[in-house]
Every structure is written in structure tokens, then in C-alpha cells.
Length: 163
Image 1 (tube, one colour):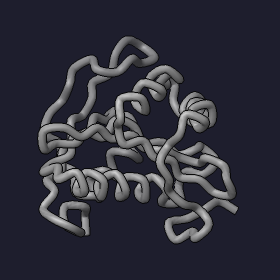
Image 2 (spheres, one colour; image 1 turned 180 degrees about the vertical axis):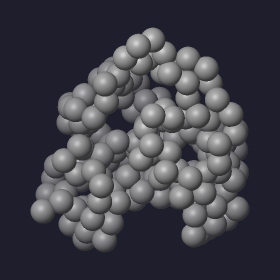
Image 3 (cartoon, rainbow, N blue to C red; image 1 turned 30 degrees about the vertical axis):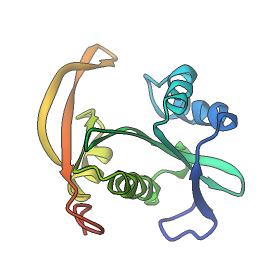
Image 4 (cartoon, rainbow, N blue to C red; image 1 turned 90 degrees about the horizontal axis):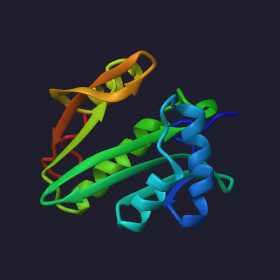
């Protein structure tokens, strides 16, 4: 049975180098233009907030956040395809927003493909607003695809996250 938002047997922990193969496998299975193993390794080595969601010792999702200068940037959120649709992406996003607050970030940015309608809906429902576009940002099947640039202002604990 797939986990859901209230699943007590899935838990967060900081990503470790030993997770990179599992994370890369999930990334490859979820995206047509995935991040490479090296990108994840570099994020971990750079001290970004890299977290995994695991169940029974198995990584089922992850998130990567960079924080600097009072701002944070959601770089990647992914749930294993077999686990999608049960609120786990929302759970990871909430964790990343909590981490941004912990680092005293005032706002959080992200880019998302307009064609990723589930992610766009998640971000809107979590309080993000579209603030712009980056033309030809992502590789696509037929050329390049724009990115929606979205942001949320963090107003304090429990605020600015759609609650």
C-alpha cells in the first residue's frame, strides 16, 4: 500500500552520500530530462539542504533547497513514480519551507515546467505565486520549454505555506 500524508512509517532525514544511487534511480524514473548523479553529489557537497523521505529504509522521495542572502530556492522535489498522488510531494515541500524559515529566509523561489500541471497546482495551493517566466529554460522533446518562476513570502511559522 502506498504511503499518504499521514503515513507514520515514512520519515525525513538528511540525505547522505550513500543515498545518491537511490535518489538518482528515482530521478531517472520520474523525469525525461533528469538531474545527474553528479548534480546531486555536488548539491550535497555544497551544503545545500538535501533531504530524503524514506519508508522501511527505502528512499521514496527527496527535496533539495539552497539558502543564501535571506532567500531560498527549491531546486528539486521528486517522489518515486509508484508513490505519487498521495500527498508526499506536499509533505516534502512543507519540510523545505520549514527549513527555509529555520534559515531565516524571507522568500522562497522555484522554477517549474508549465507542462507539469500537478506540480504547478501543488505550488499554487501551497501559497506560491507566479512572478515571471524564464524562456527556453528546460530541455524538451521538441526543443526547449519555458519555466514558470514562482515565489512565496515567508511570514513566520505556519504562515506563507497555504495554511
